[in-house]
Length: 164
Image 1 (cartoon, rainbow, N blue to C red):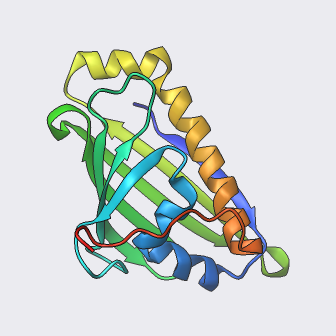
Image 2 (cartoon, helix red, strand yellow; image 1 turned 90 degrees about the vertical axis):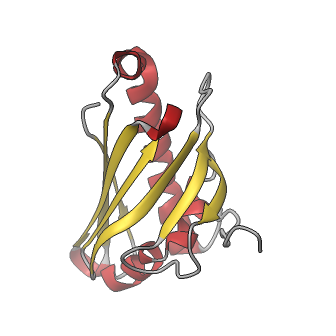
């Protein structure tokens, strides 16, 4: 799938926004409208190597499990997550959060998600609405992220390690 990019401007310093995003356990709080049943893959949820598994609640999605792991964390400007989803985890994902300092203490957060599948049926599903659905869900997640950081409202449940 072509890259899907969404962004939001948050009225908070870049370091504060980065500290929130760097903790993968916080991500369920602003994405739980479409990524559900979150479980951390290790106890340490901050920084490079932090990982989580979740179910993608997309219409008609029979193979909804996915996972991400922070591959690069460059404070306070960039977080790169890699993962897999779909049937037999055959769809590779690459997500990048980029934080740019704005005027008057604001931060512009841009999230780009790219997927790669070796199977034609997955590529067809992207063309027939999957890409548009992902873009809408990511845009909503960015708005929810802004609300959580600026006002402390709308946060879902913080994820924990499986079995706890």
